[in-house]
Length: 114
Length: 114
Image 1 (cartoon, chains in turn purple, cyan):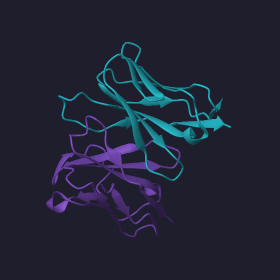
Image 2 (spheres, each protein chain N blue to C red):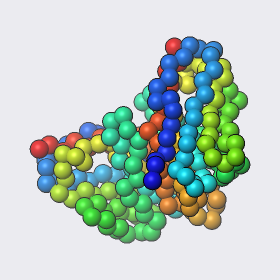
Image 3 (tube, helix red, strand yellow):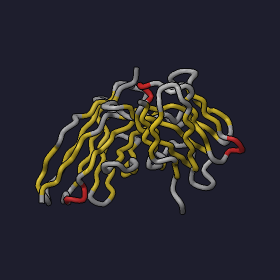
Image 4 (tube, chains in turn brown, orange):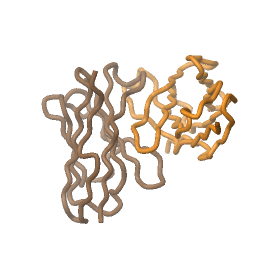
């Protein structure tokens, strides 16, 4: 079974630019999560999709972040415009059983805003 | 604000010894607890989950939960150099809440010396 795939693995952009991160969950997993780890901090929850619906977006930091999951398959996380403090590693994860039993993470996208 | 606290380490143990990793959590409503292992530059990998007070064993790993003390631990028996990684403790809500966001600690770095 293929794992959770994220790309790009690295992205360096200038402040004010737009970046779109993509996540392909494990096939058949209805639940998809976005987390991020900024420098020196713990991994923090951003949002949770069930199929194409946003189940919980309580962790989204502000309206510069937009997450979508068209058709309930892959998801994108757009940051527009990017700020310096958005630098960090963005992880995607997926699960089949609602996530109560844990979930599988992707290898992350390292975003650097300069 | 929900918090999970871990000692950042590094925790250094000799090969073959028992490594003991601990975390505490602030939210008494937390009902699900996870240990993830993360090698440098890689994705977090779920190694143990625990939901009830007491011990849960899986191979060389034992997770322990004490909800009264709000304390979770992970024991690694017969530690191997390949166990050297950062161990992340995470707490989540009960199955009936529908909320699947996890609160992560900042991780404990384990070094197993050959």
